[in-house]
Image (cartoon, rainbow, N blue to C red):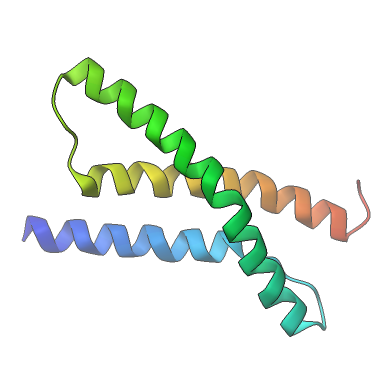
Length: 98
């Protein structure tokens, strides 16, 4: 039961990450898809680097290796947080506030 719950939470975090990564351009669906893919590929290294640093620090503190699912969860939480901030910047840029 615990394993199924972990898989469900990871799937939900993955879906939220993908939804937060969408870059929407009104009336231009193909442009939205291309920009979303470019955005995901350009921001993923930043998320991965931050995750590696946090996981390395936690492993040093705990003195044992973290499970992959826990590291993946850290990656998704960091990525969602960063995507929220970048999404707000994109929204304000599209609407001319910046």
